[in-house]
Length: 274
Image 1: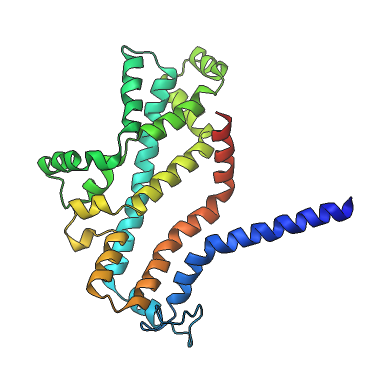
Image 2: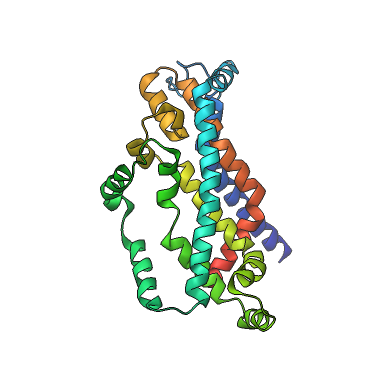
């Protein structure tokens, strides 16, 4: 029996290791390709490791002011976008979960219906709106249009519906208003679900490409995906630098997951209970 358990654990470990290796292979290849010469990245026959390790690609891309600026714009915008997304969607979720007001049911149906509209279907109309508002080529056009999310409102609302009413009733008896209840009771309890929503918002901003390409032409406001796309188009032979830039662009997101992995797992568990 012990031998069977050991065999099962060994088999599961091997399978888990193989799956992990397969999942990480593209990322590892991009990182290692950044140490190759430009002619060696796509050379045949394929070589995973470079003939000679070199830091030139990484030092050159880090010396590119446009790359650093795009990383700063993207990172700062992603953080701001995540914070605003949490603020807007959590307050809306609390309103739909706990407050009573006219046409609440109809408004909630209207909000939920937007979840079923593909983002690509409203790109043109969204562009017309921000154009008429004079928001093109501004930092605001990157952040504001996508802050409100029906999916995030729904997720947070479901979490708030499971918070005991007794806590809220006790606070109301003590004279607390709705704002005080939300800030003192609901927000402190929302950290696990906020991690999931915040990281989702962060990734949505960090990986966005079509919307910034449509609305931004000023190189000073290019996001990292725009920068890498333009780099690939304008300097097609510098594949080593492109790989180095792609690896560095993935670094903040990887660190984010490593820092919050415990809370991500707990948030996933919470979402599975709703």
